[in-house]
Length: 468
Ligand code: ATP
Ligand code: MG
Ligand code: MG
Ligand code: MG
Image (cartoon, rainbow, N blue to C red; front, side, top):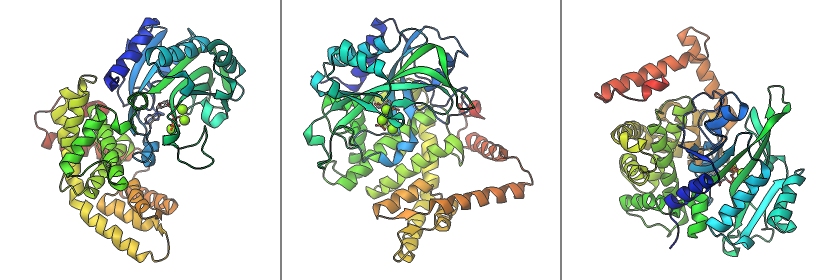
């Protein structure tokens, strides 16, 4: 009997409880204090104040399963086996308590004893200069030197902007020949889905300041992140994270709505996986109080929702359908995340309004884009002006336009698109007669507030108010 996603989550958290960790619940996707971050993208992000010493943690050892959003991965979603814009990151954290030796030993114990992963399929990477990590892996754990790969700063030194950072060590699973891309050059380190990275152990020993100095922390910390979906895909021996139990029920539901079969055609499969992914992000973001808008995290939400809606069209779905799929996600996740159930109706309403609004311009926008493509002739690049017109008139976020073009081997002049955007911002500022960069906020929020009041009478406990 294969372990389910919920069981793996529980196993991880209870393993670290046996190592004296305090289990904390996932923080909201909306960062509470951190202005440098749009959305929580790792288990460590909401715990930053404990790492920097700004706040005292409730315990020196903590374990969590954190909801994460990573839109920078959006173009890989559905195409690789391992990327989602939404995923759950399991982690164990030490705030100046245990360090490298224990972190490595426990990670290994969990993988090989609790999950019973075969040792000969595991590989590890370390930061090129981290001899200490090499020694622990090799001498203490017994990993063969040829399976301890030294990597550069890009991969094995962890930092996001300022704050806590340090070298890291990652654990990979070799899924075997059948997952190889088949290129003669395919070996460990290949970007294909054979060797899957699933756990990152960060040895946080520095604090990066505004001048770019790496200051040694008085007490080094541990921050680890293991992708729950990836580990589940490995344990369940399925092709990709969308075929894992729980997630696959969303996928199957989409297939039944659209009357399509999964696994018959790669293009269709990509659309099915993209919708499965984007609706998860959308559902969790709305439940954490994000509302669609043209700026900031509201725009991240809008982009994901509209991109998902468009892939529905590719599957032949007519009209708005995303809120139905969202209901499915809630059904599958409300035990782990009770906030979903509490806000079920609210989430459905927000998604419906946004998708229906987009429905009004989606078809025409698609036609317009097709016209532009025909006018492109031999060029493979759509002008920024055209992409901006699609954005401004038809509500096409840039990544939606890019996604459509990419299917036809085409691209957008992103530089001139950015220029058009900047020009529009200036026009708006001039029209308002102010110079405040933040001026847009009022407009959007007062509009949202109005939407909420007119459309959701009776929903006055809305979390909207907490972000206004
Ligand atoms: P990759 O190189 O595969 O993009 P990463 O190095 O960016 O992953 P980390 O920042 O090290 O990922 O995050 C820790 C763990 O979180 C990863 O080892 C992986 O298990 C998981 N993870 C990261 N990004 C994603 C994603 N987009 N979807 C699902 N799981 C992810
Ligand atoms: Mg990544
Ligand atoms: Mg990586
Ligand atoms: Mg990594």
